[in-house]
Amino acid sequence: MKNEMLEKLRQAVAHWTVPEIPEEISLGDMPGDKVNIVDGHIKKANLIFPELLKLMEANLEGRRNEKTVIAIGGGSGVGKSGIAALLTYYFKQIGIGSYTMSGDNYPHRIPAQNDAERLRIFRIHGIRGLISGHLYSEEIKEKLCRIQKEEKDACPQLAIEEPWLEVYQRAGRNALFSYLGSNQEQNFDEVSDILSQFKNGADQLWLKRMGREETSIWYERMDVSKNGVLLLEWTHALNRCIKGVDIPVFLNSTPEETREYRLRRNRDRNADTPFISMVIEIEQKLLEGQADQAKLIISKAGERISYEEYRRLLGESG
View 1 (cartoon, one colour):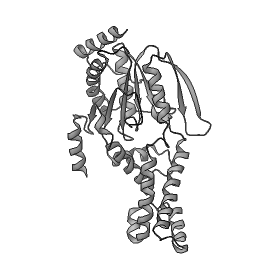
View 2: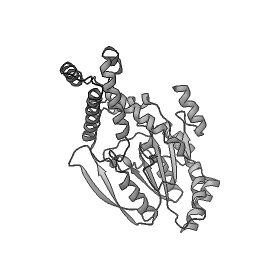
View 3: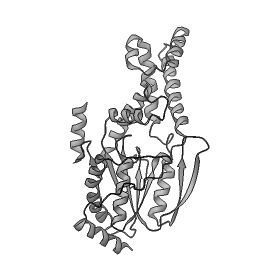
View 4: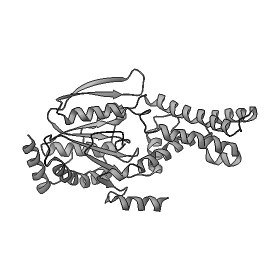
């Protein structure tokens, strides 16, 4: 089997051409996902795929196991789902089975509950920051309650008018930084266990499905016996808590793109609040700290760049 896989990779490296893309292709396994494949997705997938073939060939040399786990990470709206769908389609066209696994199925809480937990953490630690700074009083409590009801307690401009609010925001932000993308928020252990089962040759995997309601969580048993590739697409796909990824791919984006994507999707009531802007900014910082382990970094413009070039882009945008 391994020799067959390597031979297919070598043939594809030498002769691969972009296949015709049908109007509809299979997406990942996130319930309710609807992705329109656009030219930007195709451009990036066409750039990534030949590079993946070479990396896979090198990765399988000298290994007993022919299974490969590829991670596609980056901010919301950068095109992970569309690109992952195209890559899986391309693998199947060269005779290598591939399954796209969405990491969005693996938070500990459904989206509404997780949003509430993020806000709870921000607010309770913000108040504790005021108490530690000897700033909390009956007057501040009343002001803060009013600002919270208006969903403006994360607004940096308001902190200029109310200096005590800057202390509250800093303490809450620090607590959020520890929560977002952590094992407290995401079940990285379960994801790592699935990757381990796949690489150890499991014919079937029990995979989680998570909708947006408390009653919409279930598992499906998937046959992966003919799949040589498991493709994990997720904002957190390059998180260092995940074990078992062979080829990490990072798609660069900006906080502005993420915010615009959330607004277009418009599934969440608080998609356009100062708090969500803060969450997006923190998530972007976390992603920036993971890019160094990527074997492929793709720029916003759809070009392969080095980590050094990526850092220069960050400096220019900053």
